[in-house]
Image (cartoon, rainbow, N blue to C red):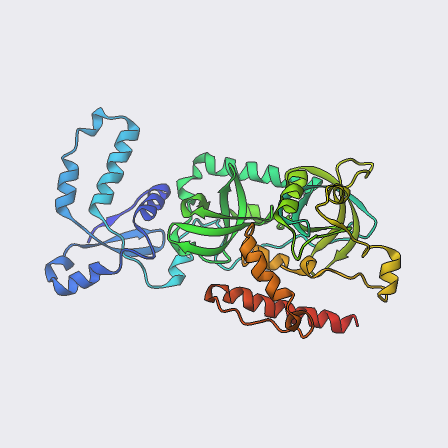
Length: 404
């Protein structure tokens, strides 16, 4: 029996090169059963406290040792040569137990099943209060995400710290391995030239995943090699992205037309704005705000949409209208749906008119908004959306009973 020991980064690179959920089945053990002489070539590779069965190939090693004299090569070349020899000699076999996977990442990395707290509404977020914010993502004027100005600086600073951490010799050692490519796992994603805290939403393939950026409200499909383990020190801040809805307007169609949404994006996304809170939804962590470009709160974004005939004037926030509805503000169906949870779980196809029309057919169906019954969707790929609509209706009925 042989035992080889390597530096942590080399172990890490070794796993990255050879380990895959879809490849490298336990062929070594099967071959050992069929060919007894193959059993004599089995060796043990120690990775921390773990032991892996690996297959040795003396023929490959002999050819690797026949390379040029390493003393005449640079240090970088010698390292690459050494790694080549190791890779030529050994092939990893996938372990059976998922418990083994949980100790496979760096010791200080986030574990499988870990949760990140989210920022909740506080006493600062009361009707009438003002705040400065930066819009980070937009689905429609009724659904957008933002950072409070004071939080934007914290998130930017944390992103720089994560970048420096990976640049300080931790790059390859902290690349995410296939066993951790699971929905719900919290990691770091390299997106738009920055490292961001992210949650894996779905695994498209062994090489591509969908993620949600926890501090920005952004969704993206990324190559799996752009994901890293996240160090525990970066879990101290809660997920900072907040949810916002524009007030005093309504769409001029059954949903927000693309030209209205695109113009709204142009006006707000990536910009620091001033907001007045006009309503709150504590359970959904949503602020209903009137947005303005200047601190004097003149010339609101809503006014610009109305003036350009991209939105209608909503009276639902007026005291008279609220009083006529027994003290409750009437909310548009498309103000409620799709919910932020549905969007963050990527159950909705953004910027797709065909999907919007399909969704209109669901939420404007009398069975849905009068009898609180979601229709059965024929497309099997929309099963998760169907379940989410059922959950939303149950929650809506509960709220209606609490506030008759």
